[in-house]
Length: 252
Image (cartoon, rainbow, N blue to C red):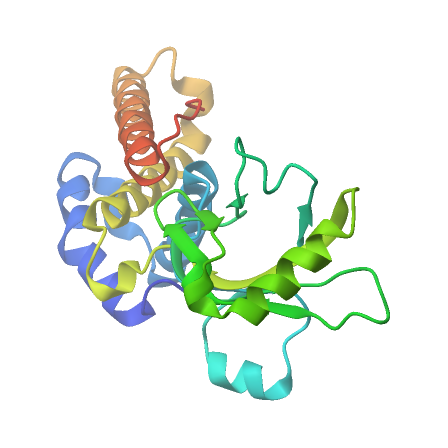
């Protein structure tokens, strides 16, 4: 599913940032709707990759979704993710019940299931009441409590304690993650996407002039301006990366 509605996004771009950029770079006025839309899609993918997160809600399954689940998802994108390893250190004081999921920020955790490598043991659902979630950083801490049911607690701890080795894919997490930019939030992220698209359009427009840059003062000045835009965008993405995930990234 696309992050933006095509018609609305193109109209917004043409009356906003594209119009402003065209005042300095007239060649942008000739950009077709098809090229603008394609460039926006490329910009969305690039910003998503550099921020290290999905720019729209993403449903994460641990096994292929059923037909009904696909119907319920509608246009929401999804991906498959294997389970997380359960290690002997999982309930030690240093790592007590700590789990860092692959996709962030977390929007919602639907359920976590403990699947052990034994035909005689049925999968054990972990009560949601046991979960302490750091949505921003994609971190889940599982803290068993008696309030969730003494029998469930005993069963969980007994099954975990019966194994002294790591169990790959034992913790299956079904959750939703990413940014919901379409709801009106994260205007700074959307602004970066639009700036990325304009920069790509300018870079493409400059390709035929590459051989004349050394003698064409106008082309040279435009190239310098694009480089300045690239640096400014890199700085914006660095700041967003730190704000959204707490991590810094290398500028390309």
